[in-house]
Amino acid sequence: MSDSNTTNFTNPSTFILLGIPGLEVAHIWISIPFCTMYAIAILGNFTILFIVKREPSLHEPMFYFLCMLAVTDLVMSTSTVPKMLSIFWFNSREISFSACLTQMFFVYSFSAMESGILVAMALDRYVAICHPLRHSAILTNSVVAKISLAVVLRSCIFTLPYPFLARQWPYCRTNIIPHSYCRHIAVVNLACADISISSYYGLFNLFSVNGMDVFFIAVSYTLILRAIFHLPTKDAQLKTFGTCTSHLCAILALYIPDFFSSLTQRFGRNVPRHFLVLISSVYLLVPPVLHPIIYGVRTKQIRGRLLQLFFS
Image: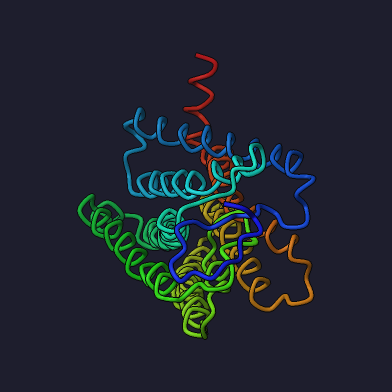
């Protein structure tokens, strides 16, 4: 299908992804950091999964949640980056309507799962620091499984309206998406109808899911800091707070790019389009790349096991 195809249609069989509009001549150069980051994400997250599986001492709630985080990172990046690279390398820009909606669902549902997992990890840190003697009794394997299931179900339920809303609109102008993946707002903007409900739902989802997660994390850390400040010595305070630094870095790696990307997409009217698309595309790779690095460097058990694998 030609890029210039703007004939009338109500149910497009395919969409055309432009990649980074305005930077087409630089696609090959842009692909280099994207490919490098994707390779690091794949290698790093598989390494986390391998180490936790192989090391019995890591079979505890914190590392179960870390494995969930690794899986969501792998799925989220793999659902978008291979298609991006095919656009950058081979100019393969067509994507079927159903595949586009499926990609949309995976991106948003697994992004929401990451947020939920960080809340679960905040709960684990709260119990470990505020109720250390009851940690194993409170966060049993059964409780961890129920929390994990709740995170998955919540993410799927809140994400389902995205593809359903996108499917119901009539697309009668063009099937060209000025983006590198099927971002919800980029797709529904092609509709020749009032898409206010899609835009409002996107904002509702951003603040009700991520916003509430940030709130619960903030409450957890308020209680954690209060417990830390009641410790008798400064060394004990620093040592205890040090167990939270990996989680705090993971939180920053997810939420700062997420809120920046979402808000600039909606309100950055004077920002060049290629910059907005580039930022939202890079955002999908920032958490998957940083999470294994953060936990590999900051978590003593994983760092020790990793060194043991390479030097034993």
